[in-house]
Length: 109
Length: 109
DNA sequence: TTCAACTACTTAGCGATACCATGTACCAGT
DNA sequence: ACTGGTACATGGTATCGCTAAGTAGTTGAA
Image 1 (cartoon, rainbow over the protein chains, first blue to last red):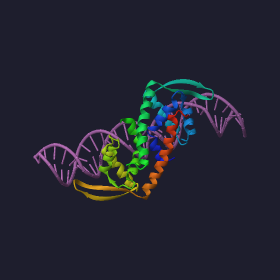
Image 2 (image 1 turned 30 degrees about the horizontal axis):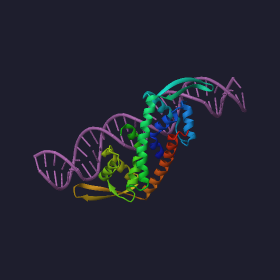
Image 3 (image 1 turned 45 degrees about the horizontal axis):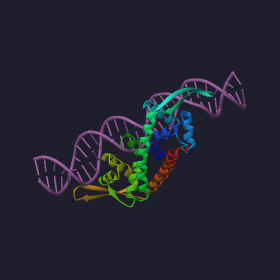
Image 4 (image 1 turned 180 degrees about the vertical axis):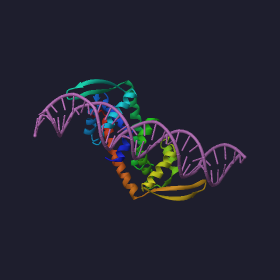
């Protein structure tokens, strides 16, 4: 999708992942394929893992290590209370930006 | 609005400014106050000027220097053809991201 | 058994962008 | 002379996504 998308994902990708995790614990590789399946075909694997490290360090998710049948053990991430709070704020920020942009698109000054 | 907004503006602020400039040439200081008036109260002045330098170097805008009655001369930016093309692409990228996010918000997997 | 392919996670270095802080400069009113 | 509004510029910082490469375990085909 190119450079524009790369820049636009900054700040939103984290929210996207948090949203994916709500009521649906998942591990890195799974999240990457999920994202790709939703059209983010060019998401770099390393990006997702780095993001997961970040949100873990920020205390937004709980982590549990589980064995896999076909590869190294998985690190399963689940959204915790603080993560839900962060996600709420994300949606607020997103809504604000989204509304401004839609207004601009309609030619609203 | 905080750190979340700062990150989210990366990639979108440029589009916002390009959108503001469509059919409406403006100078830096004016753009800054316009943005603040539209709710982006925390936009740093330096950010806008740096962005304007950037889009000028990318050839998205034409610049004209005009004297001001109350201060140093203004640099008036107007969107050119290439800028309109870039703005189109911006809206495409934005639409894609926006749709994905709205789907996520509705709980769509 | 060796090798490719898939699963699964990690990390060092890079580029782009917004922010902070500060500085320059011009003008008006007090 | 000083303050405040107008107008632009810049050097350094932090964040975040990408690139590229590596480590490791499993499976199945050659």
